[in-house]
Image 1 (cartoon, rainbow, N blue to C red):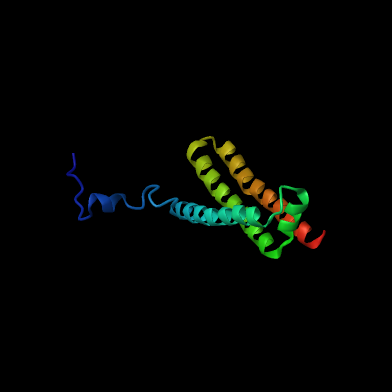
Image 2 (tube, rainbow, N blue to C red; image 1 turned 60 degrees about the vertical axis):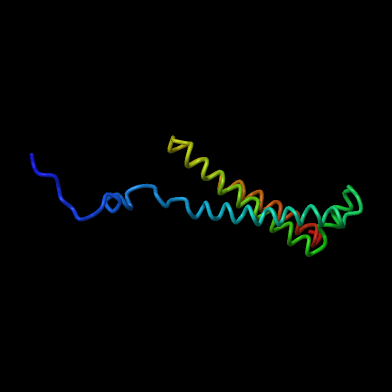
Length: 132
């Protein structure tokens, strides 16, 4: 038997950069930041709608969306909510789906479905504002 290999490196130094440590920090920070932005935008949306809409009617909702400031806020709310959702679902898919084909399919859906929903929501807001 040979003698154990002697090294000046500590056990932590020998295992550094050999695992999943550090992976996901960007998602963690993005999830927290988007959650804070969502709290602000959702609060604005509820208060603005409650204070400026004359009642729960279709015409009042169209008038609310037709205001340019409200339209920008709604578009930001849509984009932030879908970004937040995509990051959260991506983490769940990566952590709990183990079959490679299923994982890739779900990650592809997770990228495309929020994109399609965002396109539809933004188109609806623009259609109300520009009469498309």
